[in-house]
Image 1 (cartoon, rainbow, N blue to C red):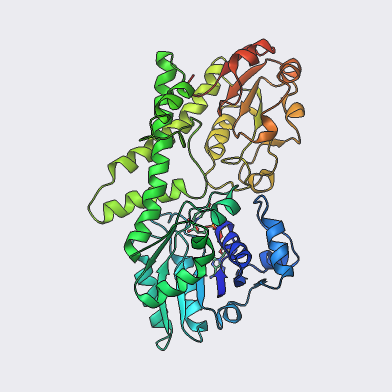
Image 2 (image 1 turned 90 degrees about the vertical axis):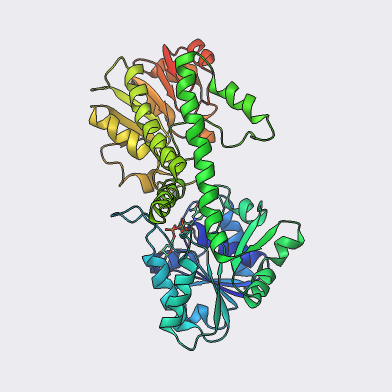
Length: 434
Ligand SMILES: NC(=O)c1ccc[n+]([C@@H]2O[C@H](COP(=O)([O-])OP(=O)(O)OC[C@H]3O[C@@H](n4cnc5c(N)ncnc54)[C@H](O)[C@@H]3O)[C@@H](O)[C@H]2O)c1
């Protein structure tokens, strides 16, 4: 199939690269010439493990190219995937559809023959029908159908998630669109991965419901973690114990500082706003959002308590700033709430992150950047683990403790055993839920 992908961000780029690897002819479009220049030169504008090699392989095979010329990419395409951003709209928390609708209009004007216009961006229920109306209004003669194909990939594991998905969800409104979408996903379907066809509204809803459910699990275990601390239980043991129940399952039950990233925060807020708009309050989702904000605030208190009630003038070594390992994405990372709060209380922060610094630096003014954990920890009053990068998992705790002024450990990802940290010379430790 001939495919155009509009937007070369975390989702669009992975989608384009993977479709080409499945054998389709793909042209990726972005309105930012600097991104396209990097990609055309075989480089990567984002950090996503393994993506560069697959990109190069498919460019060399002649199946994948990059352009800013949307009309040229859309010309003759069987399907056009819109994978542009849908950030939170500042005034009301709804998903901001400006980029989606602008892309739909551009696509409409560029359509030359029948094509399926596919929304891959996460969009509220009803958006696909609005996209259809926008396309129709911009090009009365256009021959097209629409499809909703929400994306479930995780940053840091995006290639695997796209190529070995738990499921592919496709919302359609007619047989012709279904045929095209079935042909596009046939290579995955033939390998046994479920490709589920449904109506447009259900597909749109599935994406929000899935993200809200996962966010709920995280907020749930984080609140249980807070209670564990009070009653003397260990949230790790609790999560293991409940996760062995096959009705519950063990994943997404790791206590931490709170969820972040480009999806859960904005999608939970958007779903709660959709509920309000339709007069069907999503009270659980609203509570999840509230619990997550509370969780981040609780982390600040935790560090303060560990440091004897004040961080004023104290040096804190911060390990990791991205919302999770294996990504450079800083959108809504918990560090963006926790670190400024500590700075505001007078802490001196020395941070290190394997990949995130470039995106984080403009968002976190006042932080001193270090290149490795040991130099960050020198003379510090506290070591604060924010992100569980594998580079931070096997550190020499004795060496760290020895070089610190006061060896305190705030391990917000529970990657170290506290007894071992104490044995290595740390004088005080805190984790989440234990
Ligand atoms: N990031 C994730 O992990 C993830 C996972 C699943 C779903 N999603 C959803 O996918 C969508 C995209 O997310 P993302 O993280 O890839 O966003 P992003 O901001 O990284 O990328 C969007 C890209 O689209 C480009 N763009 C915007 N308007 C354009 C236009 N008219 N023409 C050409 N290019 C245009 C931008 O320049 C940018 O490069 C969002 O709706 C998001 O909710 C994201």
